[in-house]
Length: 76
Image: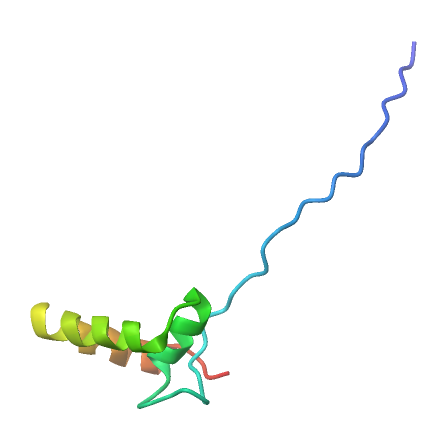
């Protein structure tokens, strides 16, 4: 006995992969905050304020994160 199974063609709507790139257009220093803001769909100013707060309240952790991203994240 062989049974025929109909294969359905289901299309899945996958969200496009967002790549983290430093921005050239909206950059103030190296474009890290502008690139992250573009990927997260938020205003770059919000991320810049959060980075300054992380730097002041986190004993310099914000600036270390920024420098690491500056070195490792490619430009658009």
